[in-house]
Length: 231
Length: 231
DNA sequence: CGTGTTATTGAAGTGTATCAAATTGCGTGG
DNA sequence: CCACGCAATTTGATACACTTCAATAACACG
Image (cartoon, rainbow over all chains, first blue to last red; front, side):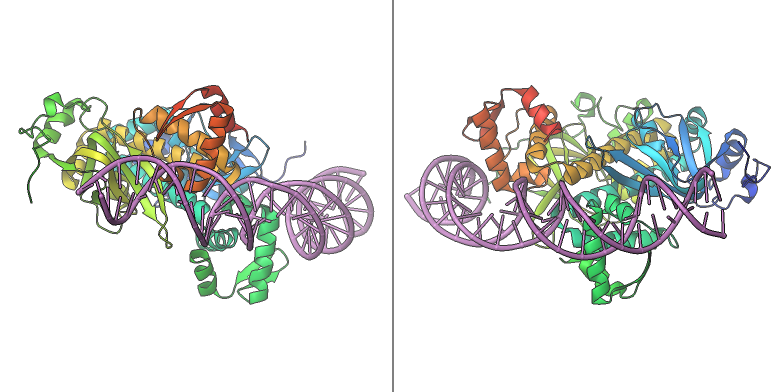
């Protein structure tokens, strides 16, 4: 019952000073910023909390202001798979919206996060009236599609070690100063925590990474890159 | 050197009677049809011929008028993987265009095909001036993205038999009266021709499909569907 | 009619999931 | 602030699905 100290700014209308204002498909567009500013709602989520669930109807578009969010699907046997990871400035919820179908994945905050929500009608209006917004979203979807298709190809013809190496580089490049559990890495790399463990142990033995408890430092990026590409 | 009988209509401007006019992201839009009609170029490709190659700069958007086209990537070891299959009315080449990068895959005609080409600038102009075109493309990319992410998840936690069953249903549903080699099925399902062979043999033994040489008839769709979902 | 591709089946090897169990580490609440 | 409990880490043993390699047969194509 006792409330913790309010962690967010008291003024919700802080769009002008939003850190993700300029690398965001909506707010970065001149003619769209004011509209978003007046229509958006900000929300906070603690690590582990769910932003939206598989099967529900899309309500609009979310943008990550701070923190980190994952999109995941659960298999019939309960195992989780991470489809996408979104950091500051990145949007979520738009794919289902444009596809005209319920959410096909669940969005979960990986760490404490602050999100910005723009309702469906506002978004569709912006797409209709501001071509630049449409182009930004087309670009984002195109990027996502490439990533997804590359993940599939990697899953088909790369062994688990390569995929873990790939995951290590991807996670480091895109989400610096974030530490990942073996399970999280495995859910991204399409393997099991045990295999991630053994692979990391081998990388450390080779001197490619340095382990400090739960944190890993990459020592020899080239070798890991080679592993990620070759076998 | 000797030319065969011309297989296509002598009048290229047959947009008004184009069979794929109404299920095509560009031409189905009222305000875009005339623009496309005057800017497009039609081309024919024989089975096995290449429409565009990995690494080249995108020139514009292609639409399949008739026939069948596949998008594939080649691994370092030479094995091919089929990313997408496009039949009449479906577009290709747009993802790289919007992502602002070279083609990441090669487009090949699976059977004799007739394609319609709209140059880059015309397309971008349409997206800018006709929101409905943008929305159509957003929808298409959103659908493609879902398909790709589902393929990845299936690759992670379904066995080869399930994926072959899935492929059988997908290929039948989307490209009726098309026969597929074991290799083509394997390149779509993310496995090998041998495994496809053995799986199909088992399906036949179970009475789920009927083999007539290279053609397979699905006998018990339910059983195959169950196989595609369970193990 | 040849020639290369596809189909088909067999045998062998192995990468990786799975199961198990012990230890460590972290967060939560008392 | 410590203790508790649950989750993550770590390592070992086992099993098996699938790829890989190989060799023959059947087929399609020019």
